[in-house]
Image (cartoon, rainbow, N blue to C red; front, top):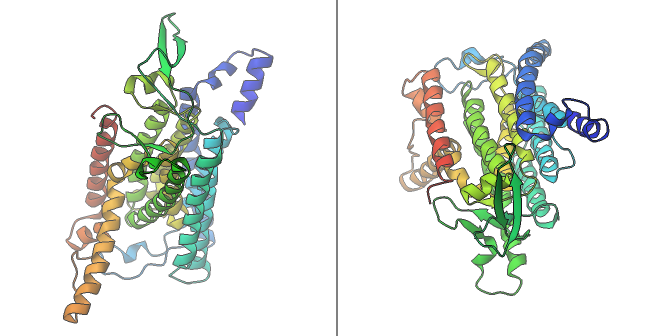
Length: 413
């Protein structure tokens, strides 16, 4: 809203200060500031509202230290996160941008699914919440929307920077008067993505198929299936990681910072040329969204850090996972997620290995055995006697290391 008003004023009245809204960096800074303020100020009011309506967490006794003390802590705090993301996005983003529109859809879509799950748990007193099949349908539906939009929208293209004089030449004039020439290949409507640590790291999903006929179409079909898998996997993984105070929010905040930087360089001709990566026109607007996302999570930590005054619930965790997955897909960096979201990946693998091994040993030996003391992995360390704060802090440190490794992939090939 502010962006569009300022843009109109800049072009029609030359009002001083309105030109600042043309800078993505300025709008990103404003988005993170406003999201922080909303989360901290309005978060307290939302927590009091949840307490008045007795919307508290039902805790199952799993034998974890300090677990029962959390009973009754307000849940559905994901509302704070969603509100702190959407308001700055509506104020500072270009709402005509297809990438921003898809991010808003992803945020609201999985936020509503998570809210419905929390509602059933709290008000219907059903600890299982929304049936898992309905969750999967919702996640698959979002993946389908993202994949088909990437395939069908004419506004979504890529332009690869090249080292040849035969390509389109773009002369960029800096503020100091110096000029830089960038050569770009024509706009392409291809199912391209980025493979880390590989020189010439662009991969076309259509190259999977050895035949040339309809290679383009088949490539996009594969892309849609990949989008469905990634949205489903990452949103469920974020949900599993949300088990200790501040763990999911803090981990996701550092992931959001990396995605913000990747969106910024992917949508900037100069940086894309310097780094030798795909230039994705108009995707720089995702930097503003990502800043709002990071600000919302950091603001939420004000109340969610140990001891938590509020839990995000599935309203927050499912939405967070969906947002991260969608951002990675839109900037063609989905193959970086196993590294960037390594904490999410390990948490999910610990659950899958635990369940698979238990079933296998029960069938073979008549008694189920476990790999971990408890899954997901953070509960394993709780069972070993580690304090909750120590576990969370160490997971954050590992996540920061993974974030740094992800950024390094831009230059190491």
